[in-house]
Length: 371
Image (cartoon, rainbow, N blue to C red; front, side, top):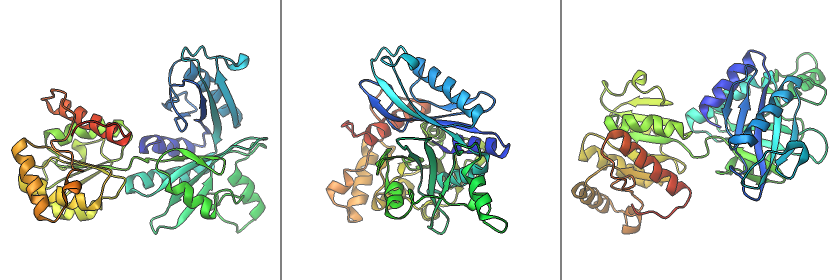
């Protein structure tokens, strides 16, 4: 779930519309997507996200649309061996999907989650899957002060949202629905902290936890031809993209609508402002060897998930020498992907952007490819 989907969710909820979320909970045999794949069905029939496409997705969307109208939630198995939900999946697998109706009162929570993506704060969805009764979906996130916040997003069996039910129980003077916490202790304490710490979809005490923007930010230093081409490619992969450049004529938000944030500042200042973290993926493609060396030296010390830099063999040798002079060991320098991108014979900025994105994907999934 990315910032675009969360923003659309918040907007629909503010219009007092119910939105149905559908997430893959488990798979059997061969299935197109693994647990954590998610889509949202809106009142006007729009769908964002995917649980695998094809006939499976068509059935999931149809069921989600019906449940959305009822404000209902359920867990359902879809597979070729299930008479009531046969998909005709040629891969011969089956998927279990949690379908959950998100209440309009969750608009502020959805907006808060979108802000977490923009500001690189931890957040996740938690699907509680009881053996009987309807499933529920909760949200966990860190506020600007680092405190944990949680909210339930789904409707109750009676048709009222959990927020409405808790508000009624609190009576006059009680907390506003947007501030209400989950009524049970399912998302509290150590369990909640473990859920927030996940970088990939996983199970915590029987609950499916879906980290939001778990891949971290994509931070691009340099808004020239390659940097500008890389922004929409990485945004399309679900990454919040931060673009930094010291040239005002290039570092303009209107030139890069897919970027979550555009920073116009000298690169030393930009590095301080974006604060690279261990989940981030960083690419240096500035206008000079010196500024690339500045960015790479600072970024390597921050231990991002991925670090790459454009460059020729001569420039690569220069950057490696600068890193050694800065005190980095050979094994640390080896973490730098330079020249960045897979060797696809690429020449144009768009082709180079695709080769860089492909290398990022390979590194994230542990595929052993040459630098």
